[in-house]
Amino acid sequence: MKSMIQNILQKSNLDARDIRLLLSVTEAEDIEQIRSNAYSIMLEKTGESVWLRGLIEFSNICINDCYYCGIRKSNRGIDRYTLSREEIIDSAKWSADKGYGSVVLQSGERNDAKFIGDLIEIVSEIKSETTSANLPNGLGITLCVGEQSYSDYKRLFDAGAHRYLLRIETSNPQLYAKIHSPNQSFEKRIECLKSLKDIGYQLGTGVMIGIPGQSLDDLANDIMFFKEIDADMIGMGPFIVHSETEFANLKPLYEKRKREIYIQSLLMIAVARLYLKDVNIAATTALQALYPMGRETGLTFGANVIMPLLTPTEYRESYQLYNGKPCIDEFSSDCFDCIQRRVESVGRKIALDQWGDSLHHTLNNKK
Ligand code: SAH
Image: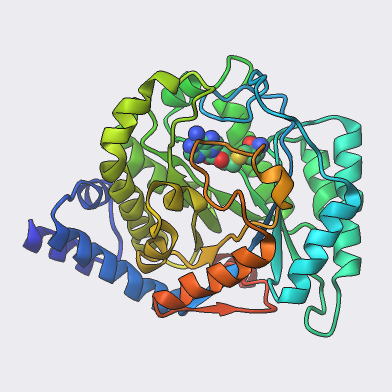
C-alpha cells in the first residue's frame, strides 16, 4: 500500500481511482503520508496563513425540511429567532475592529421579499460601516442563506457580498433525494451553484461526510464534482446526528462510527487539497464537535480557513444544526482568543485585516 500511495502522490493530476484509493486508507503511516503531501501543497499554494471568517448565524427560521438538520422547519422544539439589524451590524463591526477581515452571514432559508430586502440593506450597511484605513473595501462578506433566485443572488452581490457558500451536501442525486424533502431538488441546487458562479461570486460548496448510505465512491465523486463546478472554496464536515431529526435513531451507531468518520473527514480535506490545490478549504466547527482538537487537526491536513463564532451568546443554543455543537456558552471575545491559541498551537498564524480571497478565484479572474 505504501508504495502505491507514494506513486499516486507523485502524480501531478489525480484521477477518480487515485482519489478513491487515497480516501480508503486506514493505516496511520498512510494517513500521515497523505497529510504531509497535502500540507506541502497548501504551503506552496496558499501559504501558512489562516484566514478568519467570523460566523454570524443571524436567523434559525427556515422554510426547508432537510432531514439531517436541527433547525429544519418541522423541529418544533427550538425557539426561533432573527437578530435585529443592529445586532448583526454590531457583530460585524466588532469583528472588523478585531481584525477579522471577513464575515459569513448564515441563516435558515427564506425567500420572501422582506428577508432579501433586509439582507441587502444589512450587507451594504456592513460595507459602509466597516470601511477604514485597515479595510479600505470594508469587511469581506460571504453569504450562506440557501437557494435563491438568480436576480436575488445578483442584488445581494451588487450590494457588496462577494462570496457565497452553498453545499451540494452530496454529489450523488439519489442520496441527495434521500436526505431532503420531496420539494427540494438536486437539479435546483446545481442551477443555484451555476448562477452564483455566473454572477461572479467566489463559489463555496461542500459535503457532509458519513451521511447514512454514502459510499467511498460517493466521496471520491464529491471531490471531482468540486472541480467540475469550479469551486473556489470548500467547506466540509462530518455528518452528526441531531436528536430531533429523521436520523435520531442512528445515534448509537454514529457513536461507534465517530473515529472512522473523523478520519474520513480529515482525509477528505487532504485529498481535496491534493486535487484542487489552490482553493480555500475550511476547518469546520463540526470537526471540533467530534474531537476537541478537530479544527486544528483540519488545519494540519491542508485547510487554511477557520470560522470563529460571532453569533451573540444568547442565540447560540437555538442554532444547533447537529448535537454537541461546541462554543455555545462562550462570548465572541472568548472565541477570538481561543481561535488564536488553537491556530498557533499547530504552528500557523492568523492573517489579520485581510479578506483572504481564494487564490483559485484570483487566478481565474486574471485569465
Ligand atoms: N440554509 C443554509 C445554511 C445551512 S446550514 C443553506 O442551506 O445553505 C450549513 C450547513 O450545515 C449545511 O449545508 C449542512 O452541510 C450542515 N449541516 C446541517 N445539519 C448537519 C448535521 N446534522 N451534521 C453536520 N452538518 C450539518
